[in-house]
Length: 376
Ligand SMILES: Nc1ncnc2c1ncn2[C@@H]1O[C@H](COP(=O)(O)OP(=O)(O)O)[C@@H](O)[C@H]1O
Ligand SMILES: [Mg+2]
Image 1 (cartoon, rainbow, N blue to C red):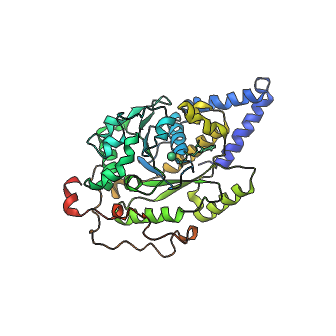
Image 2 (cartoon, rainbow, N blue to C red):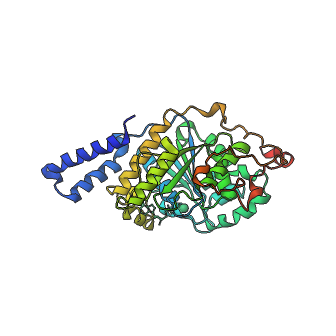
Image 3 (cartoon, protein in one colour):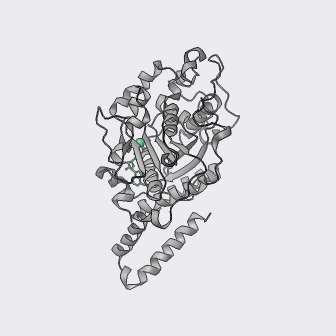
């Protein structure tokens, strides 16, 4: 695996070598060159397929940290570089759907119908214009009521997991997505819980801002709770630094702090603050298709490449979660809430309460087995 920093340096060196030729003697020509590389990427250097289907939950209960932007652009990058990706919008605001140009007005078949209704995921999957490799399950505003409606649904925490597993198994092997990316809402309610139960790994985008680490302890505690009770396979596998502003000292300090805390989980690639990234959704596009030569675009390509390269050695999940098999039985409903490992994750947020799904404690308590059995 090539060091991404090295690769970026070589790519830049190649760019400047090219720019010394008569053909690429202006910034516009350089950008066009970079754009061509991104848009014809799959023919030139496809990303490697992962060792298993990766279901990645993109979570951070803080709003505005880059969850949606990262889900969309990583999804598009993976697809443009030859991998099949499915993006699931789990935020009632539907920003992911907007950014991928997928209809999400009320009445559009959406994730709501699969979570609360009887639809299968296949009924609510839409194609995208970004790439034939990329499909999207949109979210409509109906999803806003799902947190409450789901409370009375049997096996409510497992709804999304079952929908995804059912979908994957119904597809012929050569059409199954390599990557499923789930964009979470900015809260730790039942929707995010469904996403944590459905995923095999969590990707946490962290904004390079002063309050970046605030609340992170709470998220990590929640992931611990889910791992202990509902989904033993879940783990934080990736941290992505977003909205990095190289002009500020603060951005460097935050990046350093995150790296010292999370080590190798943090991708080498950092996403810079880039105006093209924020403009793209307004055109129903990812930054890769809106302005492929921009720094925002090339950095998301690099981040996706790192993600893909890290996935190559992942072992198939047969021992943890055979595809299609029922999820592990929950602990009895009377079981006490688990104690979080002493000191685990506390450094980031010493004030984080153990029972971190504050206000939605019922949601993390296992469903009594009598109710739940038939739906397992
Ligand atoms: N790298 C970036 N550069 C500039 N603006 C960005 C960048 N990443 C995200 N944004 C903007 O910041 C806002 C919040 O990002 P978003 O992805 O919606 O966060 P979240 O999903 O975590 O709430 C959006 O307006 C988005 O366009
Ligand atoms: Mg969002």
